[in-house]
Image (cartoon, rainbow, N blue to C red; front, side, top):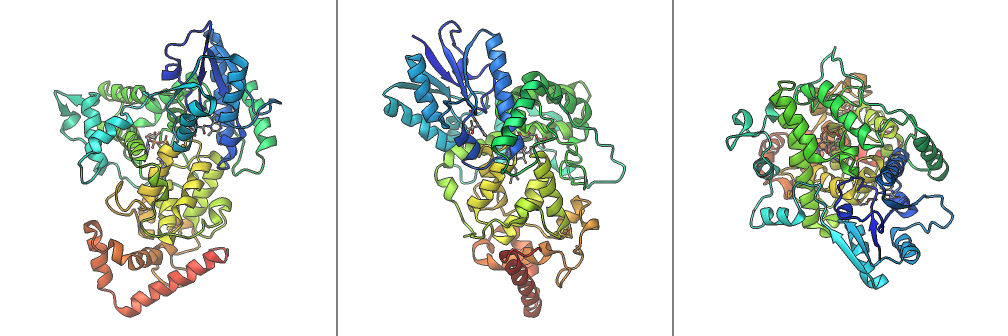
Length: 512
Ligand code: FAD
Ligand code: DLZ
Ligand code: SF4
């Protein structure tokens, strides 16, 4: 009897644990495009097209390796629209002896899969996802008994455990972290290389037409479409990053330039998260570039820290804290997500540019997601669930295990400081220092209050005032609170008045 091996849309790796002992002559590999996954949040059109095309290409590669693949397309007449009902149909078709699946990336799906054994009275084997460097169990052991779960210490463990950028047990160059060298503001005359652009083939063309027809009302531009959709293409994109961008990755990691959505970032999260690239192989390629003198240490260390540090750490937090993590709301934030996150209609140039690029590319780089889009959500008090749903749907690299800790923990401080030691709040100066946005804005970044003052300025102080009870004792905010206490009542009232006026306009749906 055969085994039914289910591959999810973010498990497109030939060495995935669920395929490891596959018997091509007997076993069935099941992949299915299902409405439920595309619509439980209304994903960006480009994200759906990317995953469907990558899934179809992956299925072809499996067939070439002699696997028996059962591929259910979204428009197949009998497609029932959910994993659960498709697995049920597949059991009837193939009469397997059991189902094998790799641990999924979202809690809701894990619960569904765990329920199948009882539902179908059938053996379901869930195997670890060992594409990650740290399993949820290992993370829990690391976290146990610690008062604070700081990424930096976790990251050092990962460096040691996997012997990455280490020499004789010491970190390469004598330091663990070169972040202080990675904060250069943007400057004129930067020659930013063209990003990787794939050529459309017939499979992707068919998928684009399907997505246009079925998901036309979802957010985002479907075309032009340039994502890699095969492992070979993703490997090429990785090599192109190492050759052309990595050298400057560190220097300009926090910089934002109008009209430059890609900067020196890698744009590899799509491929890492759906399985076309492996995180350890990616980190090792960057490490090799350093040893061969092709990239400086600050860049390579910074890049590796994102992948074996942040990426693994947020996954650890997600599985450690779910399902409660989804309900965290330390600051009692209740605002509805402002419309401008969808239509980009705002006079605030930084926000307008970041939403525009998100819509065009299903991508924004980290500092845009954090310092502009995230900071605004934090300062205006957007409900964490609504913010999370937005981030999960608009970015092609978004799966809940990575999106939620970044939103709930990193930008909204909704977990009360589990992930970050203080809220990542900042005024307009912060954005002005790291971007070229303010020069083209209707608001004046140097003005603190008044009709054309940069809203980030008064919203920042208003945020601190509003949350004094919860945040006033945070040692990392002591300087800010001391500065606040030096302001007279009149100044504070002016700040609060401007913030009230702005937030009311936002609530009324007026353009701000
Ligand atoms: P690079 O800047 O080139 O970084 C290299 C790699 O490091 C990335 O590809 C990614 O795999 C990893 N990485 C970097 N920062 C993080 C981080 N904070 N958490 C996890 N991995 C990281 N990343 C996602 O992959 N999916 C998401 O849904 C997602 N949502 C985010 C939401 C918010 C509010 C914030 C602030 C960050 C989010 N991130 C998310 C992290 C980060 O912004 C993206 O990984 C990055 O922008 C992807 O672009 P890149 O590949 O060019 O990254
Ligand atoms: C995101 C997504 C979408 C849009 N569609 C599918 C799909 O039709 N079939 C599939 O197998 N996977 C899809 N995915 C990815 C899943 O949502 C992802 O596997 C889970 O969220 C677990 O991370
Ligand atoms: Fe953004 Fe303020 Fe600068 Fe305008 S002035 S771009 S709102 S930070």
